[in-house]
Image (tube, rainbow, N blue to C red; front, side):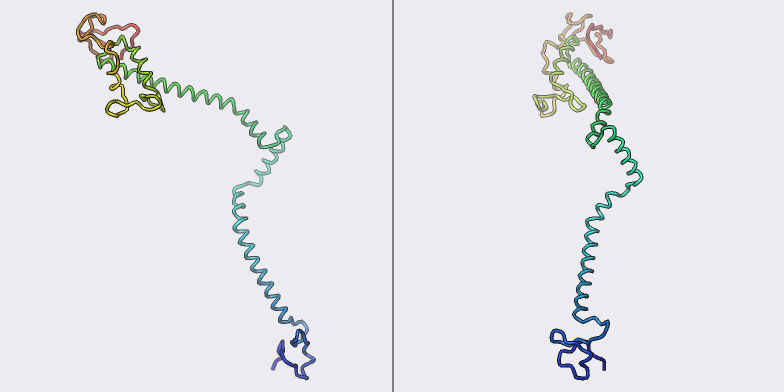
Length: 241
């Protein structure tokens, strides 16, 4: 029968030399043997150490790994090159990122100004082209409605006060809003021309209002104003389509 490591009760006389009393109990005294209490304390510390390691590893995974991902794709050699360039810039008086930004902005400003001017010019040309097309459509519709071509400059001027270029197209405006006709639709050239003065209309019969006796027999063909015989009329100062 082997000797027990710990005895709670009295130690037989023959075994006393093998035990040492400690805290009311008798511990087997063997060289190199770790007492049970110390063994338990060591085990508890090992468990704490292991648990702490698990917590630390989780913390590293949750906090450090995302930070490491920020440096993915960073070339250390390229970083050293950039640092050298930064040092060279500092020698030239560029000490902060704001200084670098200021230098870049200063160098780019002439180009940006030129691009801005080109963009403004491009937008202006587009607007002028759209408005030219509008004037052509207005001229055709107004003349077709029976208005005298002599009054086209006035008609165009009046229309320009109502129809405005907005976002690439021509829209009839009523103050800050869109103008509508009596049917609730956005005002068009066709629905606007009836509002022109009746004096702009061609006479109902021939009578000298236009050269060549143009009156009720005046007609528009191929974008030109012609009389009843088909002869093109020359209208000085008037653009006909």
